[in-house]
Amino acid sequence: MKLFKSADLLHFELINLKKQGYSIGFVPTMGALHHGHLSLIQRAKAENVSVVASIFVNPKQFNDINDLKRYPKPIEKDMDMLIRAGVDYLFLPEERDIYYQDYLDIEIPLGGLDLILEGEQRPGHFQGVVKVVKRLFEIIKPNRAYFGQKDFQQTVVINHLVNQFFPELKIVVCPIIRESNGLAMSSRNAQLSHIEREKSSFIYKSLLKLKERSNFKSLDECLQTTAKYLSSIDGVTLEYLNAVNGDNLKLVNNLNDADYIVVVVVVKFGGVRLLDNVIIKSH
Ligand code: AMP
Image (cartoon, rainbow, N blue to C red; front, side, top):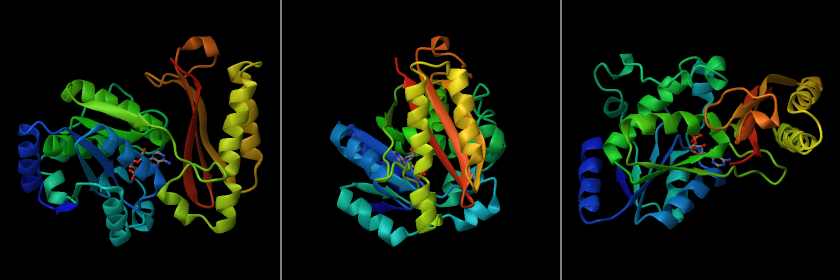
C-alpha cells in the first residue's frame, strides 16, 4: 500500500493510472476502521483495478466539540487493516489540502436535503461532509465511490452532489454490516460499555418488528408504536424515528406514498448517538 499525504502527488499518480486505462474505486472514511468499512473496500476491490482509501477526521462535520475530541484515531491499527484488505493507496490529507482559501464560505446547494433529519439535529454537518467529499473527488477522480447504507441520508446527499458536479462518477451504496446482536457497526460503538453494547440490540430488533408490523398495520401506527417503545426504554433518548421516501427524504406515512421507503432512527444511549435504518419497501 502506498501512503500519500500530498494531494498533488496523489493526484498525479492516479491521473497516470487512469491514462493507462485503470479503473479507480474510492472509499472515504474517518478511520477507526471496522468490518463495515472493510465491506466497502472488498466491494471496491471486486469492481476496480485500483482502490484508494482515505482517512480524514473532518472537524467541520462535528457540531459537538466533545464528539470530535472523543472520536477514536487508531492510525497504526487502521493502516494494518487496510494493508491486509489489499488497499493500493491510502490518502491521509493535510487540512490545508482540503480546506483551501475561501472554500469554507461557499455553500454547496443540496436542495434542502442537508437541513432535515440529521441536518436538523446537527446543523452544518452535511455542508461539512460534502465540502470534504467534493474536494476528495476532485483530487482522486475515481470511477466509483463507495458509501454505506448505514449513513443513509449521507448517500442521498452525496448522490445529489454527484449529479451536480461529477456526472461520470458512480456512487455504490453497500449494505449495513452489523455486530452479532444486530447493532449496526460504527466507530462510535467503542464508546459504549460492554453491557450497553449488548443492550443496544434493541434498535435493530425494533426496526425489524416495525417492518413486520407494517405488513398488516398502517405505517403511521407502526411508527407511533415503535417510537413509544423506544422512548420507554431506560436510558434511551429517541431523537427521531421517521419513514422517508428513499429517493428524496420526504416524510411518508403510508406504504403507498412512495416506491422506495426507508425507516431511519437515531437514539442516544450511553451518551452515544446511534444511527440505524431499515428498508421497508424497495424499487
Ligand atoms: P465513517 O468512517 O464513519 O465516515 O464511514 C465511512 C464509510 O463507511 C461511510 O460510507 C459509512 O456509511 C460506511 N460505514 C460505516 N459503518 C458501516 C456499517 N456498519 N456498514 C456499512 N458501511 C458502513
